[in-house]
Picture 1 (spheres, helix red, strand yellow):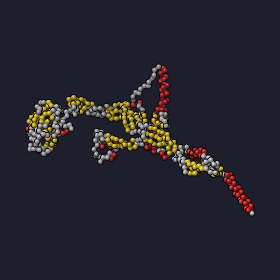
Picture 2 (cartoon, helix red, strand yellow; picture 1 turned 30 degrees about the horizontal axis):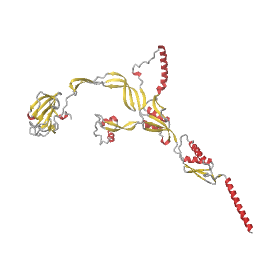
Picture 3 (cartoon, rainbow, N blue to C red; picture 1 turned 30 degrees about the vertical axis):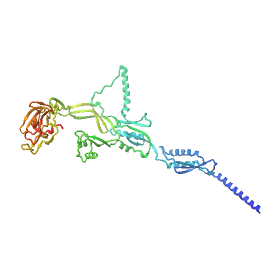
Length: 526
């Protein structure tokens, strides 16, 4: 009985062993499962951008599959494709496991990469005008924008924009210049014909032949734009950018060639007023006042002040020279007759002017819409202008200085209350209060015509000057010059006092023009 039980156990163990063997063999033979050797990591789980893309048993193929997936995704666009690639490979050692076909892993890699594609980059051109930058989709759009800047001033197709690569630059940099398209087309043929004729004639005479100079008639001038050029350095650089960073051509044209409000500074010149500046710059007065923090349009401005203004200017400026014909009324230059016996402040008009009429051909240079210079090539006077003739003096007139140093100005020129009995109520002089004995000086050079007692003036000195004026010094304590004596400006002539009708020691000073007393303060150097 016991022996029979042992055999039963043996048979059961054999059955279990056979069953396990069969199952193990079946697993090995099942599709998708691979036996592994115990040699370290032999099964690799792959993630791209956080997504599981499959499992492979050979690590050497993973990088190759990734590169192929990237090429496949990039090939779907003609432009550059930038994508996020974050691959994680986790290896483990197993006895057997399920693996994926490489085709499946490749397909899943592509799906994961597409989820990480940035905005597609496309070939573009960055146009740079000084420090201003704008991006355009193609080199043709760059050319069209620049051509629009040229055509804005009416070139009528005569001038074209030429873009060429700068061979001295490391990168693909296009430089722009304006060329005369009509000259290029017609000039080559003309130069060929002229060259052939001149060479033929040179062969006959042995001498070079020069073209006849123009006879200067108005019909000989070809009016219109003669030359054009960009005032700023213009470059275009090839690059790759997303569509969102490109500016549509029509918008780019408006941004680059249309006038924008550009900050500038205006320096106030002699004779300027806020209203004149507003007219000159075509900016409202209240706008100028606002930009410069003025209280209102009546604020005082001084010569040399710098005013902040805005000037309408495009980002890309065009300089052009235009040959123009016009008729204009003109004035002849003033003719001066110098008179050595007159002072420079004396003049007389000897002949009144009248305007003339002339025909003109001129080269006018513009910066955008603003004229910057004008060169007259030919002019013909239709009616001659008559010049204004002025006779003027050449002698510098004498100057007048304050006749006393220091002192307090106590009475000006004009109405006043009489300071003492007998004094006038309309003061035709100026008074400086000074201590008795203060030095008095000649206000200007001249000849002493009176020196002594002057009634209510007390002691006085009168001096006649070269320009016909006379100065008077009164209430003196001592006179130190004599009649007929010549004095220079600044010479000491007397000492102050309080003689005559005076309320105290002071200097009474007068200036007379043609015998009439005037306000001395209008003539004294300040």
